[in-house]
Image (cartoon, rainbow, N blue to C red):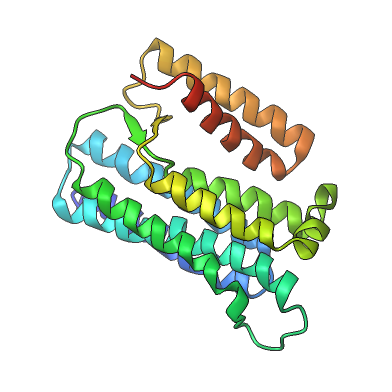
Length: 233
């Protein structure tokens, strides 16, 4: 039974991602965010459990990426879709809005990144390009802040939907770019890695305290800038 435990956690990640999709469509962003947080926890836990039990399989690797396509590909695309529908189709009685469909370009690039990641056999301790979970954290912060109209962000996106299109293009590029970015997993982290993780955890806590949900987006920007200024070796 222990051989199937990591895969069960991966499938639970997929389950939470599906729930988040429906909750975003139903206009319950904070409940959707809770399921997305559960997806993050389960995505981390499946690898942790697999290493602890010394259970690794090609099936587990494929399932992990398939679950992530939903939880960290479709879900952030849907968040951006809702931002665009609020701006471009506010009186639409239906869920569909053609002008908002480009939001799912992000989902397509996320799937491409995950597929490429599965084929990468080069041993390194860092990511190539922005990871799909980091992208999702950024979009989640923006989406929740816009929903609350924190700092006038909701009004800004409604008046300037081009900014959402710009975010879609930028994030899509970052995910498939060849820019090296730090991995922040605790497993295998040396002293420098622990200091880096602690630093980002502290910065994230302070940003969340000062900016609310937008602090999630701010810490991802900090992470990207740090990776660009101090590239991982």
